[in-house]
Image 1 (tube, helix red, strand yellow):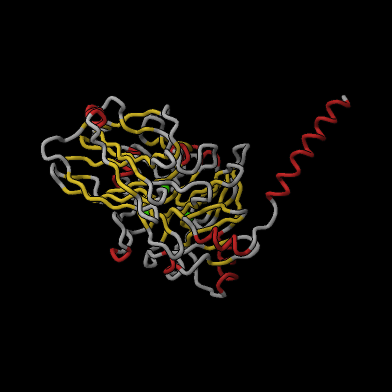
Image 2: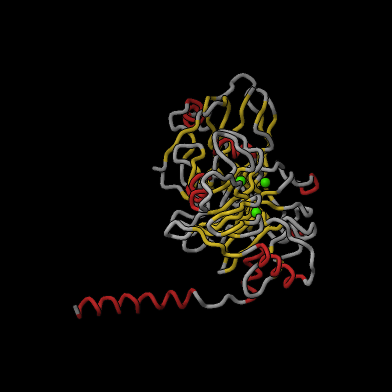
Length: 403
Ligand SMILES: [Ca+2]
Ligand SMILES: [Ca+2]
Ligand SMILES: [Ca+2]
């Protein structure tokens, strides 16, 4: 018995050090640097042309950072490759805590604005091994948890805290739940035992906005949600000069940065996630997801090692392999026996491009005027994926349907 007690005390003592280290308050400069980004966001409506994005839609995921040019992280061609369909609007997005890093296929969680692709707007979706979207938490399960199994909700904000608890907000009012009436500015959390708790009411978020700005404008809906450095961050429906930035909740509420410092010309945000400091998350994007044979396509890459050679993999059929020990997205999304990929490997014809000093590249290329690529999840076309040869990190795939 004494031996057990001793073991228990030792375990507690060994836990105490990292816990107290983690609790050390961040310096103000660290907080400013962290809050500057990079953020991965989606807009409520397509970002204005003046923002210079390669592809602007309600589903585009954009990497934004104070003082830097915003870039497309996931274009429609990316969603097509990841899910097999083209979502009309992404209204919730989060990176799940896990051991494989924020850029890994298994980290991505999101919600759709409308029922489509066989999914519902209240489902929390992830990416399945092998391709396509999969339900992580269903709308039915959330309704059951809230005690309104016959109800209906659209999840419109999503985050995970540092212990993996899921935080969310709804798009509309939901009356008569186990938590009482839920407003669209409320922030809810799913506990480890599966129950739901109300973390912040819309009134509390409104109060934080007033404290942060000294203004009484109404915030409306909570549109986006992130947990970072012990605080919650929200994207708000209003007022219009703040809806393109983020509000920090907690002990010292504040607006993260003026919205025009993010370079999106004040576009309202409806999904937010913070990339953190643990990865650069290299990504490629295309300006279109559907092209005719012979069409000229513009592509971009970002988040690569400055100056690094980048190998572009090209194939017609998608597939799945996690067996190459690659970082980033972690999984080859092209079929290893795809005929075009194999021919290009055999003749040494896979393109290599070079990242600039900011880890960026832009390239135009033409689709074959005779070949239309391979079939995958209902489309015929071409898929691409890139490897940063300096880090051996893979990007997520992109796909262009040909017709
Ligand atoms: Ca959106
Ligand atoms: Ca939704
Ligand atoms: Ca909401």
